[in-house]
Amino acid sequence: MLPLSLLRTAQNHPMLVELKNGETYNGHLVSCDNWMNINLREVICTSRDGDKFWRMPECYIRGSTIKYLRIPDEVIDMVKEETVTKNKQSRDQKGGRGGQNQRNRPAARGNFGGRANKPGGQQKLFQKNKPTKLA
Amino acid sequence: MASGDSEKRKANNQMQDQKEKKRKESILDLSKYLEKTIRVKFAGGREASGILKGYDPLLNLVLDNTIEYLRDPDDPYKLAEDTRELGLVVCRGTSVVLICPMDGMESIPNPFISQD
Amino acid sequence: MTSGLDSFVNHTVSIITSDGRNFIGTLKGFDQTINMILDESHERVYSTTTGVEQVMLGLHIIRGDNVAIIGLIDEDVDNRLNLSTIKAEPLNPVVH
Image: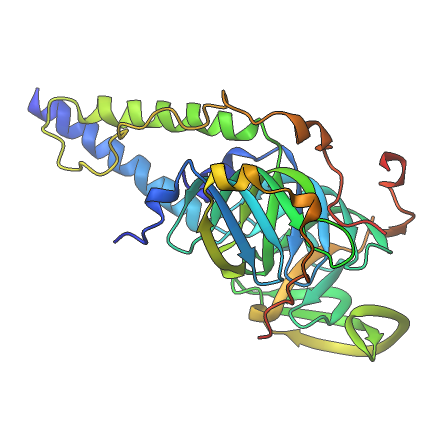
């Protein structure tokens, strides 16, 4: 699974973005592109030291300045469905023409995101939307 | 049969082309900010706000009545209260890190505190 | 072209980022720029005064620019660790 596919799937979901300068942005992902540039809406910006906060209706962030993004757990399971249907489509379209393009086959590893074997325990500590750094 | 197939393929290709075009289009439409005040953060820590007068696809910006928010001399990522006026400026796109509208941007108390 | 990371996919990995943090999680995917999907991740915070603190974080995309080291974790060995007794100096960030 590609990180950018996951990010695309996370559109309209809440997320936390930490920039290389240490600031964090909590907001809903509106859109993203192949450079990881993103638009967020209903944003709360937290300063690097976690001592100042700003509300912004929307903001655009250059992808190259991102350190990481925290995405709701359930989103990874939604990517799976999307890639499966997409692969199915392309297979159908190519049907019977001896596929000149073998590259985007579904590949025999369909059980991404099988979240059966969780280690349990500590998981509960996870709280949604909580910034990693607080004053 | 074969012609039907090639039609399909053509349509398919067109769809792909459109998709490509869509993808190349910026996800940021700066026209909605023209003549409005925006806040811009730069690589290295500078921050400014000004009225957006113009822009290009590389995110080079023309700002008028620009104010720079000065920073703690010991910490280039910490804002001080002070500002200075820069007037009409061109911002280099490659160093732009973040853009947001000034309208609706406000400093708030810790909104996460209840969760702790 | 492969980066050799394929064999890490769906395994537990430890990532040290250039800001000196240590993330542990299941590698679900990556791309050419080493952007990575880390699932069910946690951060290990090292300290010289108390044991290792684990902060549960969940699903992450870590940008490749920011990744210094990716290592495969031997879960058997890792499970035997008593993190509360391990004291260590936190890593410093990479200086650019």
